[in-house]
Length: 389
Ligand SMILES: Nc1nc2c(ncn2[C@@H]2O[C@H](COP(=O)(O)OP(=O)(O)OP(=O)(O)O)[C@@H](O)[C@H]2O)c(=O)[nH]1
Image 1: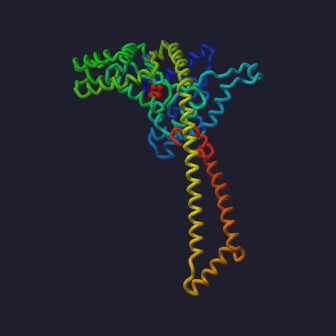
Image 2: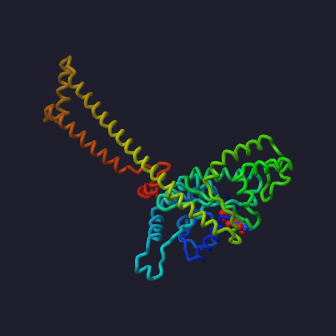
Image 3: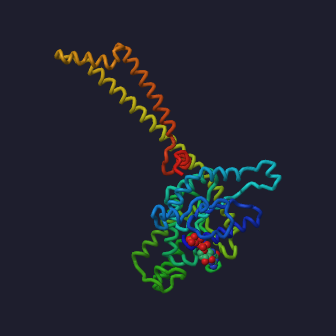
């Protein structure tokens, strides 16, 4: 969420990895950020000028970010090539020169996370990464601003929607623990009774609704509707909580960063065990559906060819009723055969035409087999091939 400390968190984990000599590969995907307080290997701002995009396409800030991401998504093949090279073992001569294999890739997203998560380019970028590397989402939460039951619940629903949209393992990072400890949040996520008690407490003190930066005291009016909604929400979300790792971190002091990397390892294992097979299954399903569609279209084409063949046969069988019709038929017959072919030869030609057409049609379908479906991670290469960038 905006202002929750994503950039500071990135800076902290980047510094942590550097100090452990586990140099990461860093990508900035926020085209609107003024300055990034850490070194990046790939920066969207090097290839897309966000302000120029806004001016040229007459867009507002979010439209500008979205269009910049779309433009950048056309280069995802190049990005993946670079990443694959850097994550592979370096050749001996480069290893001798001290070049190391990259173990981790850090990606900073735009602050307006919804622009990223719910856009086609976000889909392409995340999907391409996830189909190549184990990918884990870290959702950064501003702990002091999440201290009331309603802001906490809004944050959880937001995280939940991102989890369901990206279908990737997720870690909830409760940031700014130097200001407020995240123990209350962990308790609310594991103990339904504790959340109920906090809800009742807010209702009794008239603190319902909370406000940014406070623990809810004295900010809002209680409402029976809201309280029962939050109650049922917390029950519904129990299942969602079970899929998450939760860590408390202070990006300022570095507290909890080790715990975060332990959670990353756990989620990486989960990715390999549960998510990768699911990705493969979805990919195979798409392939199968595509094959089925191809067969269906081919069948339709052949049926159409047969139909037109039968029409012609019917027309040929129709007896002329007048002299002029007979003359017309003779002329037509000559035109169709070019004045040279007999009817048998004509039939043979139709057959060979049909099989030739079938072959060409099959070829065309094979060539265009990359279908830019919603979850299709090969869409990026489709865009590349279509030379949209
Ligand atoms: N006390 C404290 N402040 C923090 C911490 N992390 C970030 N901040 C502060 O929170 C503010 C926002 O931090 P950023 O890192 O810019 O947040 P962001 O999520 O990248 O912001 P946008 O990209 O603009 O949405 C800054 O003033 C940071 O100094 C933390 O762990 N503790």
